[in-house]
Image 1 (cartoon, rainbow, N blue to C red):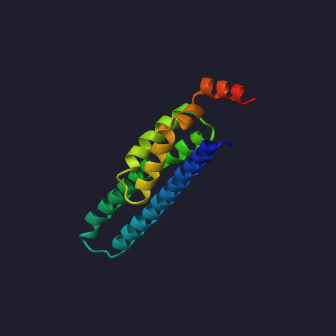
Image 2: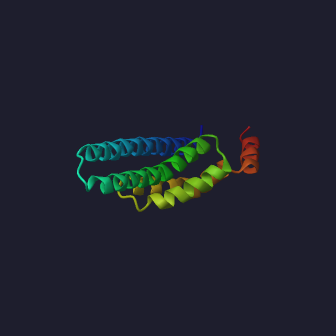
Image 3: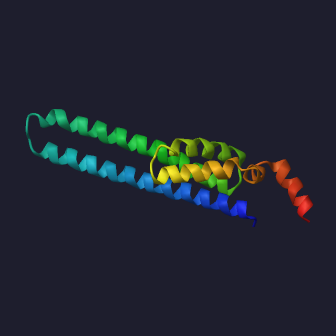
Length: 138
C-alpha cells in the first residue's frame, strides 16, 4: 500500500466517524427536544399548547440539518474506501464546506483538500491511470 492510499483510507475513516457522530447527535437532539416538549405538555399551562409544536419544529429542523450534514460524509467515506471517482468529488465539496467548521472541521477540510487535489491521490481515482501505473510497477 503506497502512502497516498493510507491517507485516503484515513480520510475515509475520519469522514465516516464524524458522520456517525453527527447522526448520533441528531438522535440525541431528537430525544432532548421531544423530552422537553413532553414536559411542557404535561404542565397543562394554556401557553403550553403553543410552545409544544414550536419545540417539535425546532427539534425537527435541528435533526434534519444534522442528518443533512452527516449522512453525505458517511456516504463519501464509504465511496473513498472503494476509490469511487464520485466519492472524490463529493469529499472535495464536503472538505471545502468543512473549512468553516473550526477547529476539527477545518483540520479535516484542509487534510481532505490536500489529499484529494494531490496528483498521486487524484490518480488513485482515475481507473485508466491506476491501471497504467500498476503495469509500470510490475
